[in-house]
Image 1 (cartoon, helix red, strand yellow):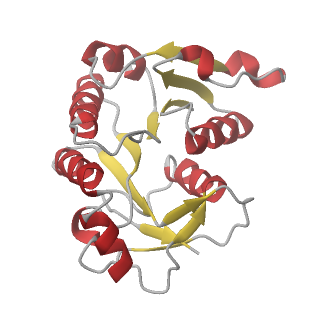
Image 2 (cartoon, one colour):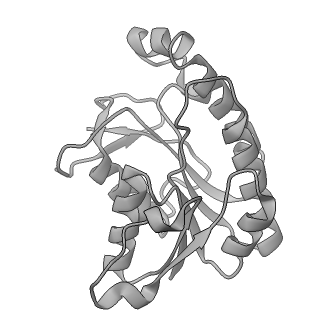
Image 3 (cartoon, one colour):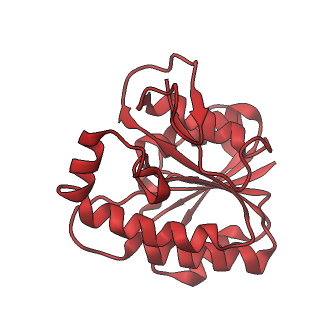
Length: 210
């Protein structure tokens, strides 16, 4: 399987690249700074290709998406300032995938985005409305574009992320019922990798955690 990973230099993206290679995929890692993508010295190195691209460069998305079977996006903002980077990113990605006829997209969102805010814990709603307001507003605009697309997307909404070791036992729910809103990035990546081939959550936005 040929899989494009966006946000490949981030902590979740790095886990995803490694897991996809371990699965046997031919992986294309998309990064603004290709040299920042961790290399692999193992026998799988011939199955990893690194391409340069930026969220606001629509042409770079078209080049990267062409010929892929699936896209895994672990892209996320690195600033809390008011911006439209996630909206533009999603607009360019959906357009590129639609043009290339690539249907499967596993997208990293967040618990508290879109319609999941209504059922979120009070603290999440407070943080969403204050410290992370601009980031979530931008994410919400990007989700509108994604949800209106014709893609076979899985819009993954994890709770608070940690750098703890993977422990498995990830739970998913459309309402969040029975799911603790905390998750190790390694387990998040594993869930997202699984969704590139699973139809369990297609065109849905599962809330995930332990």
